Amino acid sequence: MLLQNRVNKKELKKRIQEETIKRITVSFYRYVIIDNPQELRDSLFAQWNMLNVLGRIYIANEGINAQMCVPEENWDIFKFNLYNDPRFNDMPFKIAVEDDGKSFYKLTVKVRHKIVADGLDDHTFDVTNVGNHLTAKEFNNAMEDPETLIIDMRNHYESEVGKFTGAFCPDADTFREELPMVIEELKDKKDKKIIMYCTGGVRCEKASAYLKHHGFKDVSQLHGGVIDYVRQIKAEGLPSKFVGKNFVFDERVGERITDDVIAHCHQCGISCDTHVNCANDDCHLLFIQCTACAEKMKGCCTPECMHIASLPVEEQRALRKGRKKEDSLSVYKSRLRPNLRDVLAKANTK
Image (cartoon, rainbow, N blue to C red; front, side, top):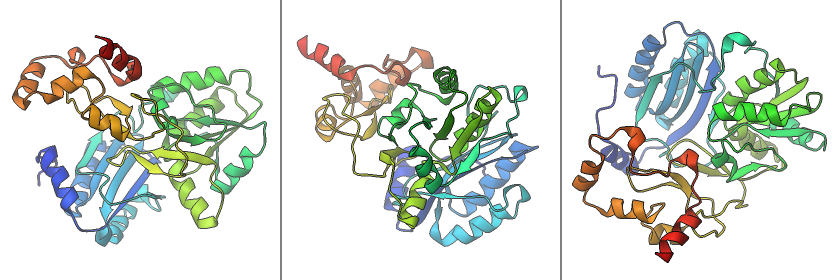
């Protein structure tokens, strides 16, 4: 059996858009010893490909981290097969709240050094000494105490569109960059009550253990992350202390949690929280763009990218051919975070 996808992205996206079956978008993770990640990778790819499962899954010696969409008709057999592996028995699932079943268009299962790129040496601290796991109700109650410190363990582009009220949101592009920022921010607050959250919980598992290793006394984390928080508050009729959108790493990009729009279009400044990737294939900058700017800029971030994207495909490919990735035409990489309003203003004065 072929253990990788060979169909081009355009065709795969067309297939998923035309699909009529119902799918369940789910995420899960578990830190567990996996002796042969490649063997497990091949086995899971074969199983899930047969079940028409789509998604992005990372496997490492330290465990598994998965986001996927499963055909509703195959959900029971999918769970049975997963639970049949003792390492994944009773795996807790986080089910998406906003789901049209088109969150992924292909199945990707990769072997990685770690299931989350944290930049940490796991041999230097006890990774199993994690923080207390809080339910949505317990998290809400902890937030009522004005002395509680709320830490967002996600990246800047995630917290920009949605966050818990009063949270410290590090201005970081990656989880690797974020951990030192959090330690620095909290260095004189080691006796305070700290509660942290992330999208599905996996980043907080490592982050809470890292904080405890650095001497923080009272560390807790939102169990299941924002995804399961939303499920719990809806099931229990609790108020949402998370405002805006929950950024998700699939084709949906975000799940609407409350009607609050806390972000602004990066190009014109109006209230907006719609993330897009620049339509220039040589850029793909992730930024926030309103409908009017999307139409005006043809889905691009700058006039330069709009010009390149308007060229015939053959010319675009010729521009990219033979160039190293770091020599990309676009200087507007996500971690440089250009001020697009300034870029457009300068372009308009020429």
